[in-house]
Amino acid sequence: MAGTQIDVFAKVRGHERAEQLRAAREADVLPYFRVLEGPARPVVEMEGAERIMLGSNNYLGLTGDERVMQGARDALDRYGTGLTGSRLLNGTTPLHLELEAEIAQWMGTDDAIVFTTGHQANVGTLGTILAPGDTVVADSGDHASILDGCLLSRSKLRPFRHNRMDKLERTLEKAAGDNGGILVVVDGVFSMEGDVAPLPAICELCERFGARLMVDEAHAAGVLGARGAGTAELLGVEERVDLRMGTFSKSLASCGGFIAGSAEVVEFLRIQSRAFLFTASSVPAAVGAALAALRIIRTDEGRELMARVLENARYLRDGLEERGFAVGAPQPLPGGDAVVTPIVPVLVGDDWKAVFLWRALYDAGVFVNTALHPAVPPGGALLRTSVMATHDRATLDRALAAFASVKDAFEAEHGTLPGPGAH
Ligand SMILES: Cc1ncc(COP(=O)(O)O)c(C=O)c1O
Image (cartoon, rainbow, N blue to C red; front, side):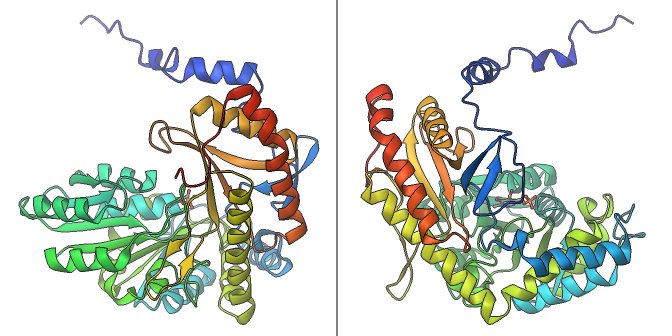
């Protein structure tokens, strides 16, 4: 039999991003894989200089908290560096069980299951609870791990346009004709734009069409709601959401993920989810840190930290708008209030402009994240800034001054940036 002429590695050469990456590297404007040389704090050491960190998900600033670090150390001392196997076989410690029980209490659900990463929580839940014959309806802005789980399940995927309830309704009408079970899955807070899903309207539509609802609270758990239980709590629909997903890699200052929900679904995942069964358990230090962070979140101090991160977000958003940048509007809430989540995107539009603006800010001592297509829609490049509860006003003022100081020179060289109201 003749062999193939096609090299399976051919795709690694000359792919559509290769030229862009090469040019960005040559101009030393590549915003990715920059090296952090110390702890993730409000001001960090990166590549030989101090930079204000506006590009992390350490919303409560707990990664450097002595009690959280002690939680990790105690777990390390007691259970060692790793568990060398899955939760099913030899990877469950009392810390895992305590963490699952406390998450279920925190979320107000029957039960919760802890995965090794948040990505695995999504893939391992969607890939298990959905099957061929079912339909999954997903917001087009959902996190990549949601999409991965949907694809893995081989259920019918019906995406709808980001946060558009008319489109969701139409999609559910079509999904009803598929004649299988229906799951709607949305981010509570969207990871790049920081906007909030209109959960009351989504719940209503799910109820009308007999669909189940899963909400990814990765950026909302430990941030939104009086208990920090996320968007579902903030919007008063906890009882109407079937599955709530969260990660430990953001407010909980560690690494790992969870699903909280009914006992029967969680138990099914425990015995069926391949991303749970066929991977090593989280290392004890990660579980110990997450548990310590969760215990802080559930106290008055946690509530103060959550209030502070939201105040900081509003301060940064308003400050950027005053300085002529295009930031999103505060999100209206039922009852007349509005919220600015800790993710404050600055719209730039063009990919290269975003990359050059990122570099100018980096040189001015501020690190932000750059989101280009496909992380955002084409032509929607943005700088994703985010705050911590532990940023003080003086540091945020310095960051705002850096934004203001680079703007004129940047626009003279690269053209105008979108202004307030352009989002
Ligand atoms: C919305 C959302 N869901 C899931 C994940 C995956 O979580 P993790 O980083 O813990 O794997 C992330 C973060 O990367 C996220 O932003």
